[in-house]
Structures are given as C-alpha cells and as structure tokens.
Length: 216
Image (cartoon, rainbow, N blue to C red; front, side, top):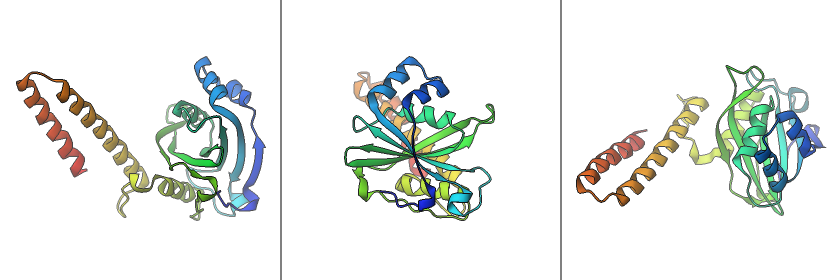
C-alpha cells in the first residue's frame, strides 16, 4: 500500500451517518452509502506540519480517505458528494478484499459558493493488489504534491507539455472525452439510420469530429 511518512498517519474512523448529517445527502445517496460502503477511515493528513513542506496557494491540506467497500466498485456520486462538500483536497483509496484503487479529482475552490469546491475531472488507477499500489510524495509545496498525485494517477490520460499547465491539460482531456462520447453516439446513430442522404450528412459530421479529436 501507500508508504507515507509516519507523521501523516491519522487513522480515524468516520461513521457513515456523519456524512448523512453533515453533507445533507438525499435518500437515494444515503442508500448508496449504506449498500456500497462498509467503513470509512481518515487515514492520513498531509499538511505543512506533517510533511515539513510549505502550504500551497490553493492546497492547504490533503486528506487521504480509505473507503472499504462491500463490492468492487463505487457510485461516482458518492465520491463527488464527499469531494465537493468537504473543504479540503482529498485522495481516495478504495479497498475491496485484497484489491485497491486510487481516485483523485482536479479540484478548485468554487467562485460562487464560499468554502465549497468545484470538481472538474476524476482520475483513477486500475484495481490492483493493495500492496502493488504506489504513490510518491513529490514537490516542495502542497500544490505541487497534489498536482503530482493527479499526474501519477491519471497517467496517459493527461497530455502534459512544458508550456502547458495541469489545468490546461485537464481541460483538454475533458474536451477530448466529450468528443469521444459524441463520436460514439454519432456512430451508433449512423448504424441505425436507413436513409442514404441522411447517412451521408451524418458521416460528414463524424469526419469533422474525428478530425477535431486528432488535432487536439
């Protein structure tokens, strides 16, 4: 599993009902918490005093939550709800039996809701044996540590370049994902279309989308 400095170890169990009370979740989401999650632990706290590095401009602390699951998988809405409402940057470690997976988002302070966050995109590792999961703490500020967590977990999903910020890379990856979904939907539509003239028009739209994706 993750080998983090001993000073960061917190290991506090968080009762699931605390999420219901604090986050004011809807009944459907409360049921998902109950049926999908066995337990939640606040496993580590990465902060200036536990890592001996500087706070960042955007990241003051990084919390590591370990979620033990009743099944191998989780509803994204659970992760998003916790992430949006808790005013810290969070790395999620999902565990099911002997397997584990890391989840992290590109998270920014909300301009419209003070103390709340906007979650732009999620990245996760494959499910691996828990002992095979690795993550390096890299950077002299918590901003950089968090950015490097995202880069390590996202892997090839992010196209990074020297002249490009992480936010720009995330935005580009998000747009490419939208294009891929549009291409898939259009291909399905073409397969169902019976009229030749309509097929020709849709094929033109498809070529335009694929060209836009290739040039991004």
